[in-house]
Image (cartoon, rainbow over all chains, first blue to last red; front, side, top):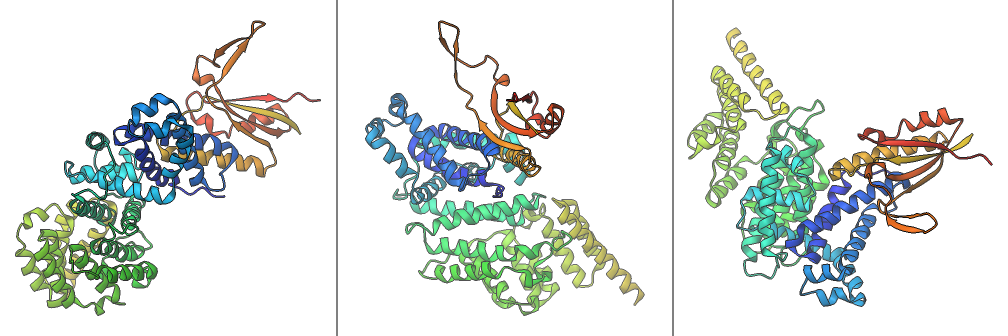
Length: 423
Length: 112
């Protein structure tokens, strides 16, 4: 049997969530120790004996037994869980209770509750995401730092502070709490940002990024498993993720180069993911709530419907961006809207719209802002201006595939100018 | 062919799950190679790092086994090889040697 890479990382979130339910959030470190211990035992045993039939179940069983051992020490039980001490002090109830906590359905709920706990309003969005990645996805501070081009010590501090906040709340967030709705919105936002980081992020490592997308999708689909959290915006968020993920196979061509949406080989889009995404979008429409995720998913669905870039219904997309600008105005959405307008009404209109974006200074650290300006100048025939914008974009490029993409655009602007001079 | 015992000493706890996976995959590849080449007699067992030591006529029991954890035997495997030199050669593929202080002790099993 072949070992599946990342198995430890993926199982870690499940185990931490279950053990935290048992030990309480203030004993998160103990839960993490038990999980670490299970991994170390797995390494020791499996390396000599080979993989067990079901590695995940083996890990879960090991963690469970370790938890039972710890709780059998009467003192541990009393100190950790004053409320549950009676249950855990009796051998009759100890084992069945722990088993119950490790039941697959319970573990799914525990992960949900952990997600809600991580999205504490006292924490910054960055801290919420770092905590989710650490606790629910099993990424180390180092791996998170790589994905976000941040330093390991900065991420470590962020996680440590976050864990202190969690410890103060003692219990995993209860989905029946009064601030459930606010927390759900924060969970949506964190998962959305996590997915985006994977999709558009700065990390040069393609593998890291697709893992982030996959984790965001795994956690988002947990929301659909629970009636309380399976709201229309949850479905819309999933629709948006699945429809975008469908395009991932075509985003990078065989040579490893970034390919823009309009030039992608659409036959490489993943039809299964796309149809699942459309399915989610249909379910998102039940109810009268219209979230930003609904609109973004609807835009992705319009793209998914066009077998060729030329068939894209740009008028529909422009109107959706109009709606999005009303709901959640931001310079990035303004930029995307301007790009859609350029597709619909031509490059000159696109340039006007970009220049009219309010707060566009905030886009000036974003390579694709200058890349879009360059693209429209090029199409409008201003080759020199296009070249200059592409150069500025190149200076901001965050990884080698962005750099290669922009170098190719600079060359295209140069060629277009040479061709114009010959004519 | 004769039998040899490989005793592994100086194992280290992996620093992260990802590192643990890497270490384990190296071991699995090594074990698989030993097996495919017909050298694996018994995959052996890993050992806990706790234990007791019982000493002398008084049968004094102490916690043990050793003061230095790096000397601890972490596990064993039985291999088949032509001779001691061959067995030592085979042991060079063991991933424990990637650790600082990792040791494979190669001991011939006494012939009956």
